[in-house]
Length: 300
Image (tube, rainbow, N blue to C red; front, top):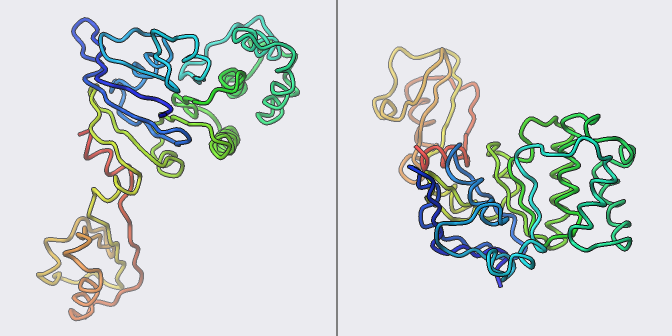
């Protein structure tokens, strides 16, 4: 059984086809990246999964439960950390979490888990503080605790590190990595592509409501066969060897950057051509393909 199963999903708004025949299967225990530019349909897809938006057509299930026909069971297995910071300003942190726990029929037996969440997210000292008195970063930590209060099998993080400081980002990723190791399925949307590259095993890229790529991180990176070789020389030559001219991507003073095809343009050949032309090489740097370069290619 998959953690999330999406089949032939469509969502129409007036004049907009927000989701266009989306098919996705996310295995249990996956750290899954859902990437795309602004307006691509990511938040709409999450809203359909969470039961906040009704799809025009298609089916979505969470842990085998249909999000429409079996919405109680589906929501029991799903936790969502929203992109927007939404809270009731008059409740304390502890009250917010106890109320959220009560929504799922969890009583005093859940107190120990709430205390663990507070400690892990460095919120224990804020337990009796009203939400309106918290900083933006602290409010986001409370949202994360809310999403986890019922111990869902699937956790969705919608832009969780947008606008947060380095400390919270570090705490968040340590915590989510721990949850993933314990068997939780994590679905991450982020515009910080280096986060997705570091954390996710499988990645889907959605653009204009369609899934344009679905592959492992290694598979996506392999779609870009080029790498950059930056060579710093002691003195710029008057003329580059003819063989290197088509490969030159950029030149700044004595720094030359070459765009090399992994199979057709061996690095050794470039260095040999420079040395043969009497160019003294002072330093070099190899830039491997990044998820950002693949993302830009697929979404442009």
